[in-house]
Image (tube, rainbow, N blue to C red; front, side):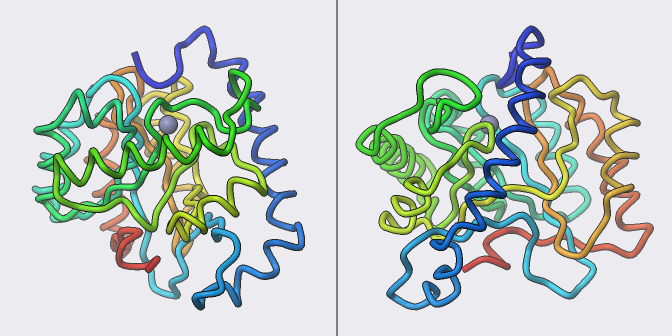
Length: 250
Ligand SMILES: [Zn+2]
């Protein structure tokens, strides 16, 4: 099982498009305008990030893990062999079930992003009824504590919302809890929606841009893991390098 079951794919595809539209709308609200000045101690809302702020030929590979460990070992092997650092959005539940792998991710210098504890949609836009502020806070805290205990690193200041669902209250809460960055993506590989490894590589290389953030998954239902080596080599051949959110978003 990956984070989304096949039966849900059609529904989620619709919901993803919907949440992207709402996300864009949320970004244009007045709160966003204050995000710039929020870089000081006065930060009021988390910055929603879809690309890294770089002028260099760099992209970020981000892997979300919410259910099975799937291709995690293979992904880590390829990253080590290719000397590439990546970022992993981990749920607390996944961390609890995969302590060794979580340690390996941290020890090899990859960045860990807080992807909540239970992977519930915060707004309920994609599934469920959404979470209250108190529940959202608990999800953040529980995951950060567990990652710290298991791997000795913090998840702050990076957050990735399950299904990309967030709202204005989430951005305020995140900033308030030390999560300055609501890390989305510029390119969804759509591996989770059943694309083949070749289609994933083609899609990602076709959407190359400076600071691109690729959304990939570790789960066994997605071919992102098997596509990784070809994707990395394709990027290298074209002269592109790799950045983590830690290096670019502080
Ligand atoms: Zn996820």
